[in-house]
Length: 378
Image 1 (tube, helix red, strand yellow):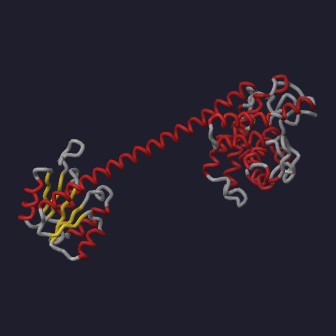
Image 2: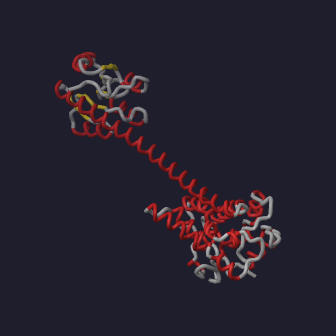
Image 3: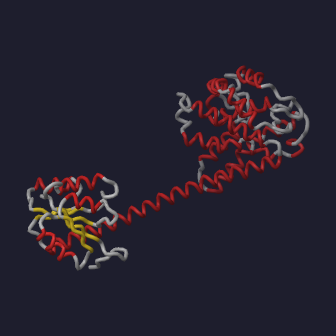
């Protein structure tokens, strides 16, 4: 039997108020282990709480001052000593005494007079069990760190993916960037405000609200599939051109779906991105596109984006229109409550209108863009 674990000799703390017992146990264990001695409970606690902690403790019960039971109780109450195995060595041989010791957290209970072979086997067994438990704790700690690391990597990959896709849209129409950022923050404000609303609480948990913020920039990703002569046209679209422009909702959803299919898994942030890309032009009364969905048949993420997107379209100056003042845009959204927009989301918008105005100022456009072509057909 090896006396070492990981290259070091395990230490055994012998606690007994009788010198002869300490000597007997010390002579028995010294050939195999590094032995520490304590004559009473107070000394035992001082050693166990010191820098040179024992790997296992052989503990007498009947001692003056602090009893062995009290020593064990105090050891198990502290995080840095609770994992030290305690074996009681005592003349108390009643079943209730043994039960009490084990309930306090001891790993074993040996009655005196001791059998040297039994003591050696019990000590070796519990040192091996302790080493195995420490290995598992270290392994679990490593796995927990690895999970955290992989989670950070996954989150970073999501953010990089969104940034790359958003950059593609901006490359096609380089004046859409601030619109993307404004709508992202509008959606976050709405979701945070509605997280405790009875209609929305189940869908707007912390994780979903974070994913909404991450995914919102992809709501117009389908515009990368619109021909330049329409996307970049510096004037009003013809009815035919407007029909082509409307396909950006389906183009965006399908592009994200293909990416998800190639990955071979369903990703929550892409689910929300698909919902917003495909459904943010749907209207509460069913008059929107691409499918004419109405009411709660429209995904919540798309209903949130609908308010954010239209508000931003109204206040943003473009080559074909002036930017509408905040108060007029707010009044327009209010008028369309229950017509174009979910009534409860409009109510939240009205309560947050000051925050919307602040977001618009924070991410204002320096130069009038030409990105929001919806509504330019006539």
